[in-house]
Image (cartoon, rainbow, N blue to C red; front, side, top):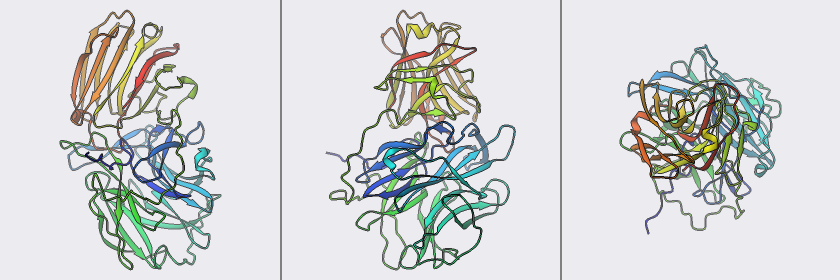
Amino acid sequence: MEQSPINPIVSGFAPDPSVAVIDGTFFLATSSFHLFPGLPIYTSNDLVSWTNIGNAINRKGQIGLSNSRTRPIHVTDEGEPLLAAGGLCAPTIRHHKGTTYIVCTNVIHKKGESGQCYEKFVISLTDIWSNTWSDPVYFDFNGIDPDLFFEDDNRTYIYGSSYTTGPPWISRVAINCFEIDIQTGENFHRKRRSGKGLREGWYYLLTAEGRTDDGHNTTIARSKSIWGPFYETAYLSHTGHGDLFQDLEGNWWIVVLGVRKEGGICPMSRESFISPVQWPEGGWPNVPPIQSNPDMAVKGFPGSSKLIPSLRHLDFLHIRDTESEDYVVSQDGHSVSIRPRQAPLLDPMGPISFIGKRRRRLQGDSRVSLPKSSLETVGVLEAGLAYYKDEFRVVRVFWSLETSTIVFKLENKLRSLTQRVEIVSQPKRSVDFRISYTSQHVEFSFAEDGSKWILLSKVDAYALYGSGFVGPIIGVYATTERDASFVEFKGSQVE
C-alpha cells in the first residue's frame, strides 16, 4: 500500500511553525494573521499526526484584530504586489520550568495610514491542555518575528528582526537581542554576561531571509556569546521561518513553512513541513531537501502516550474581531445560525458576519443548505457560501433576497478581475451551495430542493492566487441593510 505523504504535517494556511516539547508531547503553534480565534495550537505524539487542541488567542478583549487589514506592498518577481496581511504573525512557543510561553507580533494597519505598527507581546499558561492563555504582556521592541530564549541562569532574552524606518524589506534590518523581564515585559536594554550556550558552548541563531515568497530561505549562524558576533554558514534550506528542536532521544528536527506548487501556483498557500536534521558534534546542522515523506523513523518514536482529546469547534474561524453572540453552532457543527451585519465580505475593517474553516485538502468540496425560512428572512441582502483569502480576493455563491436570484460573484481587486452570474430561482424548500476544488480549479454550484447540482462557474485557481501571507478559508456568511433575524445554515461541511 502506498504511504500517505507525511508533509505537510499541518495542511492549509499554517505558516511560521514553532515547536515546544512538554512532558514528552510535541506542541506546534502557527500564525493566523487576521483570523479569530488566533494562534492555533496543534499537538502530536509522533511528529506525523497533529491535532488542533486550542487557540492561544481565544476570547474577546484578549487582543484586538480590528486593524489587521491587508495592504499591498512591494512588487514580487512575478510583477504583482505582495499582499501583506495584518494581525498575528510568527509566534514562537517555548516551555520553561512548568510554564509555556508564546511570544508574537500583532501587525496593525490603521485605516488611512500608509505605515504600520507592531504590538509585541508574551502570553503564557501552566497547563497547555487547559487553553487558558493569559492576557498579553507587552514589551517595547521596534521589529517583528521575536524569539524567546531562556538562559540557564534564569535570565530571559528576546531576539528579533529590527529596523529603523519603513517596512523591513526596504530598510536597514538587523537582528537585535535584549534581556527582558518575562513577567512584566520590561526591556532592560543592556548587555549582561552570557551563560554556557545552547550546544557545545555555541549559541545558534536561525534566521529567515529572502522576503516571504519564492526567495524565502533559512540560514543559521553561531557565536560563543549570546550578544554575538554571529558567524553564518550556508543556506540551511530553501524554505522559510524554521524552528529547531529535539525529541526525547536527542534527535534534531526542523519545522518550516513551505508551499506545494501545482501548475505554477500554490493553491493552499503556506503550510507547515518537517524534516530530520543531522547535526554532527562540533559541526553545523544539515537539513536534507524537504520531502513529502522524509525518513521519520516513526516506529518506536520517543513521544508521549498521552491520549489527545477530541474537542469540538476549535477549527471554526471568523474574520478579524467578532461578536460571539452573533453565532450559534450546533453540537455536531453542521448547523450554523448567523446574525447578519452590514459590512460586506470585502470590507477591510468592519465586523463581518462570517464563520468558516481553513481549506485543508488539495481536492475536496464544501457545501451548505439554506432552508426556506432563511430564504425569506426579512432584511437580509445576501446569504451564502464564500471562498475567502482577504478583502482583495473573495469568491462566493449566494441567495439574494432582494432579487430572488442565485448569484455567483468573483472579485480579485489585485488583478482587477470580476465575474458575475445570476439565475432566477423559485425554490420551494431549500437552496444548496457547493464549492468543489482541485489544485487547478474551483467550481461553484447550486441545487434547488435537493435536485441535481447546476454549475455556475468553473474558476481557474490562478484567478484566486496571488503572493501573500494567508491561505483560503471557506465558510458561510450573511449581510443586511438593517437589523435582521438570524439566518440558519444546515448541512455545513468544509474539507
